Image (cartoon, rainbow, N blue to C red; front, side, top):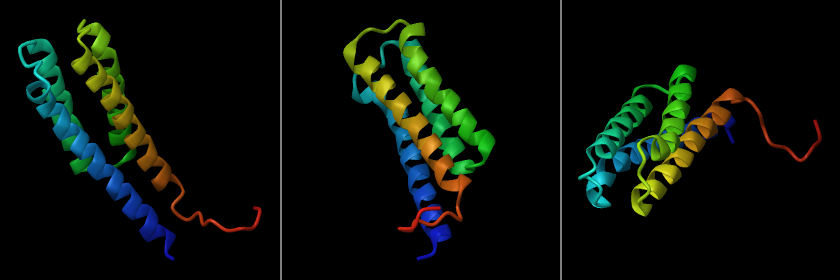
Length: 122
């Protein structure tokens, strides 16, 4: 099996999941019913749009770093913007974890594309 193709496919799948997370962030204020909180609504729309655009534009190291920062902001925004209602709070905390994990996981898949798993010790 070609590990380059496998790692490339794994990175592509992670990129698509991050794009889906970005789209969900855009839709979440309307689906979860917190669109009346304009600060929170626009925060999620802006972060979601940035996540989706960055994922679709490139998977370079600086872009992955920006995705991690956006995920960190999603986490912090739950407290900085002062929303304590359960749906938006959990939505942003979970999405922060998923966006950061997606960015880091895709980085791990790209960092060592020539590694092969074998039953032998290195």
